[in-house]
Amino acid sequence: MGIIGAITAPLFFASNALYPIDVVPNVIKYVSLVNPLTYTVSALRKLLVNSSYDITQELLVVAIFTVLALGASVKSLRRIIE
Image 1 (tube, rainbow, N blue to C red):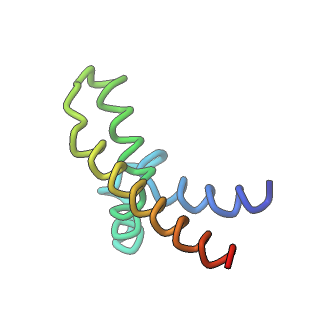
Image 2 (cartoon, rainbow, N blue to C red; image 1 turned 90 degrees about the horizontal axis):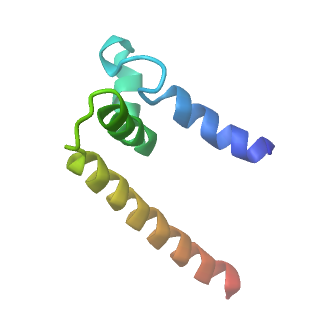
């Protein structure tokens, strides 16, 4: 549980879940641009609050992150097994 909290807490606070990206410092803005949780929260807001179905950009970013993370984990798993 500690490891999960250590990973998810920075991702959560560096996303747009609590504050809009416009009001955070520049360092956090740049971190939030590569944070997949930012795009997930944005897609959920568009669907639930704005009743908009235009979430293609968010889905594309999350899909690219998923493919990259899966590729990195498969590569490291092969290294661990050998």
